Length: 233
Image 1 (cartoon, rainbow, N blue to C red):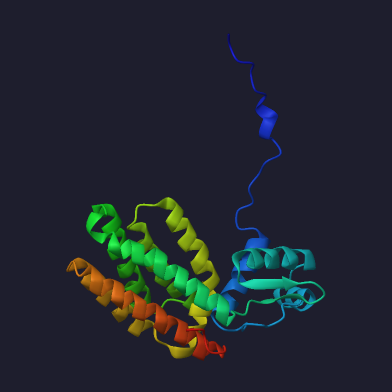
Image 2: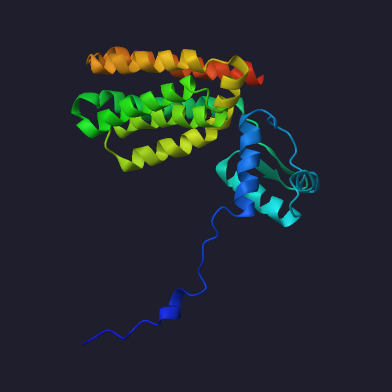
């Protein structure tokens, strides 16, 4: 029996606005956060932002909702929206969770597919290329975290990769501020290249130990750069 025809107007109300004003406002606020023009804890007042950007308050409100969803801003009752401020316990917990996920990827290097190993090499090359081209802090941050996510990709588990992506969202603002304050992107590139060399040489235990130290250093750098209290042991 033939199926009844579906009216052509079934999705007639759906539409996509390419690069809407909300998208552009969110992009500008995101850039300002990563470039340090808006520091952690800075209140994001709708009236002031609307006047500065030449847009309406509802547009700013929607853009702020985007940043809150991305973890770059927080909304508190009776206090409004402000740039997110990492907390010491959260940073420590995220780094511990990353070690579990990225460490599993390192252990899986020998059994990973050629494509999965190539992704690690390609994300490292993209990170180094961004550094050499003097890319924005936002792009450096994205390239940096993409490399770490590619390590988890060595496990072949989409669920573990999704978990890693959620974790790095919590850290990307903190890491961007560390790179900006310490101007250490070049040093980070060398560190990541050294980790890949250990993988290529099949020295997986050494690579895992290297990752442990790398993530411990990341915790310390975040705490010092952002003035957080001592992280737990």
